[in-house]
Length: 147
Ligand code: IDP
Ligand code: MG
Image (cartoon, rainbow, N blue to C red; front, side, top):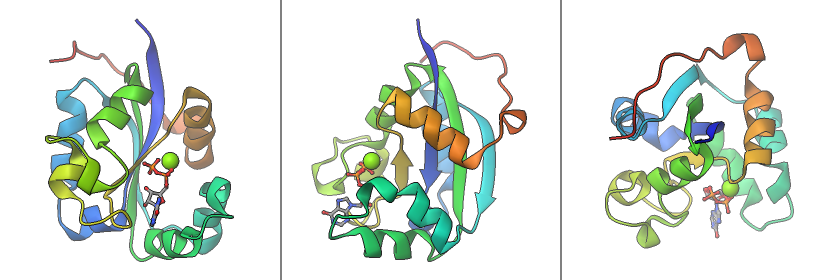
């Protein structure tokens, strides 16, 4: 049993749609606990730094401008195999390809406005959590079995 931490972001479209609670419920129902949570307006510099790995991609500019178009919710999620579990709960990048019952399939509008971000590996999860949260802002608590 590997208890991991991963970074989740509810993107501006998730806040516009008023589904912060519904998204967090999906994580909690699957045993992923938010152990750090902050609502924040990202600056352009913060968004560019966060997505630096994508800076040569054609969609980089649009991605950054979307991510700063409104506030986001930043969360560290903790639980069993949290990195892969989060990706599974989110669904595929393009909501058209996301499996039924995933956040992106149920709530996202397009590949641009795809409602959530999730770290893609344990190594990136550690970097991404540290990008937004100090260790003193993260608080583990008793967790329950996956339902
Ligand atoms: P992921 O969010 O599922 O990990 P990545 O490939 O890491 O997907 O891409 C980061 C984000 O960039 C995506 O969530 C999406 O918002 C955006 N993105 C990825 N590919 C495209 C594309 O082909 N067109 C427009 N936006 C894209
Ligand atoms: Mg990614």
